[in-house]
Length: 163
Figure 1: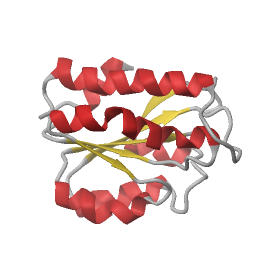
Figure 2: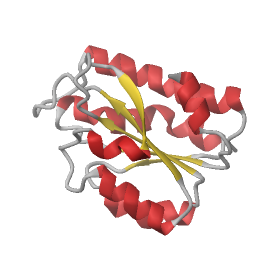
Figure 3: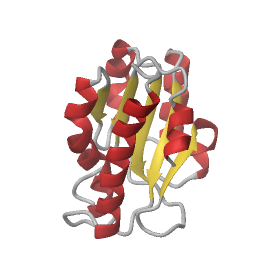
Figure 4: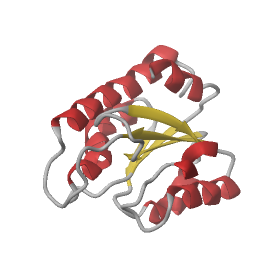
């Protein structure tokens, strides 16, 4: 997974991590939780995190104004895998996955952003265990989010092409 992330970051000048999710729906809160884990480290490296909650479309103006070269969207994605499975989904395949807890499909958001600027966009999907209303992440998803946070920061540090 780390190599796929490094490959995605090729020619990166500025990374924007856009996290999506609803903290009231158990594992769907993984995006906001990831944002809280990486916010400071990303800013220290000159990159940006936006916790978009359930309305990522409301942040398109902010995204454009920040002028990232790469956008990594992170969300709970039904992939029919074990809970906590993480997969990097290139923009051409985003519409093939079920991401049903948000008003606008992410594939529409990706198309809109591509029409607005020259961004390389990918989705980092994490297989949820539970999307019912409730609080807290399942253990498998929480572990995956911690691993993902480390992977993002490590890729920026090790790869060195972004920033």
